Image (cartoon, rainbow, N blue to C red; front, side, top):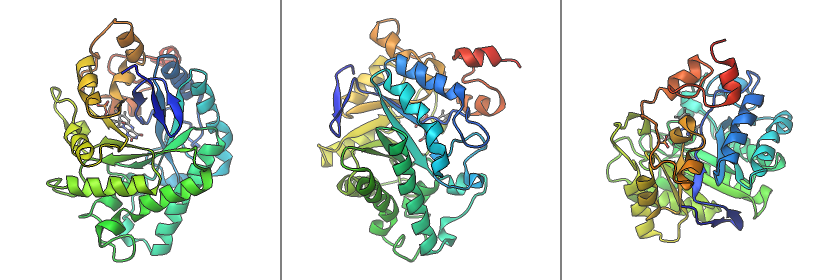
Length: 344
Ligand SMILES: Cc1cc2nc3c(=O)[nH]c(=O)nc-3n(C[C@H](O)[C@H](O)[C@H](O)COP(=O)(O)O)c2cc1C
């Protein structure tokens, strides 16, 4: 887990990724706050190899964000503030990746992509490509395109949800077309060195049964379009029981069986040294979210032999406390700035 890795020609100092985690610390106007910069600094200082931001909204209209604290990357005016994130991460020899997303069915103004015209779908494609260019200008090493967790692009690639009859629906090839065109566009505009990651759900049908073949087809298409790493997640990570672990390992095993060279990271239910080791038997990297919410120094402590297991209870209260209190975890504030303001 502490062996370096090369991602699209760039050195990653170990196999750890902080998976995208919406921090609810953003300013109401979609700009970056000081508390966020402190959070990235703490993560960088504590041995995370690749840090992925929380999802950034690609829409220029704040009304289409996922929530009122979500950061925005939908206009050039955000570039200056966003520059602070990679600047704080690069101090620690870690890679900085911007996750780009559109909430769609789960936004403040939910909409059904099946009702959009082809032109409007192309407009969304161009928002993502423009967001990739802004991330590049802001100094990020790359982007992660969010095709998971009930947001717009995941709905589009779900072959049961997608009812479109134009070039963006009606066949497996058409359902993956939008992410594919986004990758091609970002690659063309941001150059060969820019890292493009994609976060995918293990399952892409409503029943979620027997669809690993579909996942393999999607992932192969995405890699051929120019993506450098796929992170495998799933739509039900928040519903897993406290004793579950390595939620989507079977999907990663399936992919590696069919495409041994495909660069993959596994996210979900990796809470201990044992589960990290088990994941890395198959995946190239591991991605952690809740573990680093409750203990941002988890990796450092693991490396120093000070722990073998996270204190995370998998209670999922982090989803609630973020929205109601200026806090990160039921164990209380874990960042000095949040500590200062706690209780105010
Ligand atoms: C509070 C919270 C916010 C999250 N925000 C995002 C996000 O912005 N983008 C994303 O792709 N996943 C998000 N996730 C999901 C995580 O990246 C990860 O996939 C999931 O928590 C499973 O990993 P874990 O078991 O290590 O927590 C979030 C998770 C939590 C707990």
